[in-house]
Image (cartoon, rainbow, N blue to C red):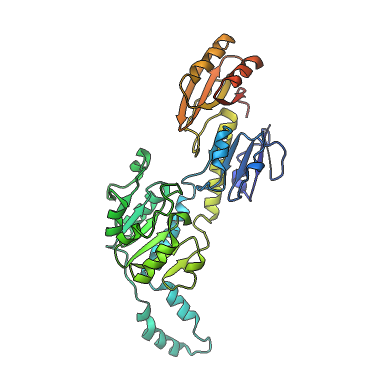
Length: 394
């Protein structure tokens, strides 16, 4: 029986992925095998010795102490792409709000008196509507920074609106490249994209290389009168630089999902309360994906969408499986296999992958290795943890 501790409210459809025969799931549970959460700021002290994995039902993971987890051999999972459609649709709304006088127009109508005669109101609206005139998106250039699960959808959205779409992603994967329509023109650097785009939308994770990516220096490359959209993370944009760009007229408008005190009350800023992924469908998708990833790891040792471990999935052969995490240094796998051979364990199948300083191994063996053999593997210098996974039963 696996035990899952939840933080925050997790979608029922996600929790239903855990069978009652094999899982106990609760917000208060002792000695959990895994943690499933959303936005809860997870402290190291909350990660007990029994915890083998942590899953975040969402793309961001800055609320989890990943470094501490890696040191203990605990994979951290996220759910990239599960909320992509929700964010894409909000970006669509933001583009329309940025190009048309929708917000100001609605505010004007709501300021009128309900006592005003309908004919008089109609005449006034006809007279004043020119104050809220805007521009069409068709024919404008959309610059997408970050071409992953969300960025690629936003790129397709722009093409569907009749926009010219250009993109920049310094770490574009082969998988992400396949998702991109051929009509999207790739830029070689951020400055080139900023110079050509009427609208720039950000879809990047927070890394040391992306923190304050839009700053006082880079923002000078923006086309004068352009619009910046940030539905990624607040740390990617330097607010002081945005304020200066708005004051100088280099930026015509800033639309963000991350309000800041310095931006409140400005007519050239639209701030939303971090609602990019706030749809019922997105919450369900994230919860189901996170639950499936935890199940795959706990039941079979497989790793998919981990932010600190290599991706590794091996079909079960039906027998016992060893899941071993070790420091990524020469000779480790050879030592482990030698111990297994000396202990009489025949290896049926295996897979090994590494990521940065961590290596991860799945080794299927005939029978079940003796406790003494497992102890010898754990004693090898550089081995972080060893888990014996019995034949599938869930």
